[in-house]
Length: 362
Image (cartoon, rainbow, N blue to C red; front, side):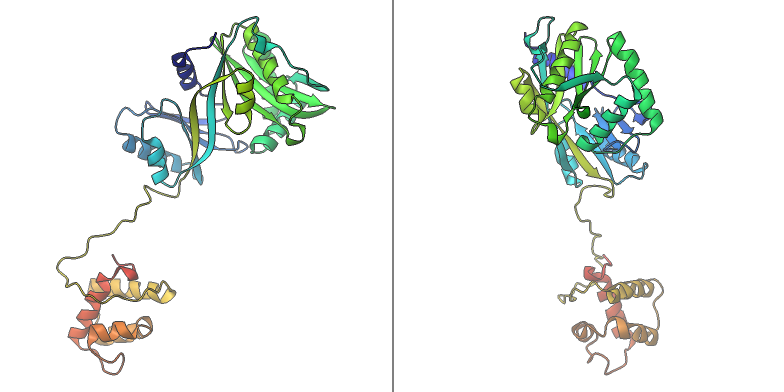
């Protein structure tokens, strides 16, 4: 019997995982996780359910995420995420890093999907010793990204799975072909739901039934420990089609966005309003974003603050403005450097430089 959409969506939204060597920041609005550096995505936002305005809560998440001093945050937009979150993320420069189908299958003790298909030469082992844990970690890094965890973490993973597999809570399976690890897949029991995760196969071993063998073994384990539903979030390009052929149905789609943390907000240019007490000129300064322009801008700011004497302004603008004859003539009425500046010409230059945003002043 197929599970209801409501039960699948509820089970999917309830699924989150924080390893014991991670740092989590949890509030009523969100759950932010800083994973160890060996994970492919060290910083992830895995829950976002703000009680107040979405934009304010998003700004709070990004402010907190920047405190970890990482270049990007991976933000999971789940089935229960508020409307408009993707658009707000994209306005901040986010791009879709991964799309996942939420798939489910009804399970029973005699479920036909639990029968393992033939996969010649494939052996399955639970990750209950350090050697198998090391093989699983190396394969995961090759398939999903990231790097090898330290030796003590491998030992903890093996010890944990030794206990949880025997108690019916689940663990990770590793597939071997000719003595070489070629595939992995995990299962975790949550009430009557068998959560399937970490399913991957080495590229050289694909199309040999390895994924289907790991899938069938996990379904059998779940059904034998009382699961009535198998739940998995599969990549739409790879595991998704295999899971559909195995009888799973899609109930929605989640997307993971990569959000650059160098941006403080939507990528819209901001401008300071022009000073209304200064006359507006039709003259446009030629665009030249060089070191001269930076030098000129710094000097003009100094002029605006304390107002240098005409002779000092004339000397300092010798390098900064001489390359713009049109600017000089339009604002002084003189032939570039032919005549000395008077106070009125000085004032016109000062106001014109202040008004032109091509110099970076407004």
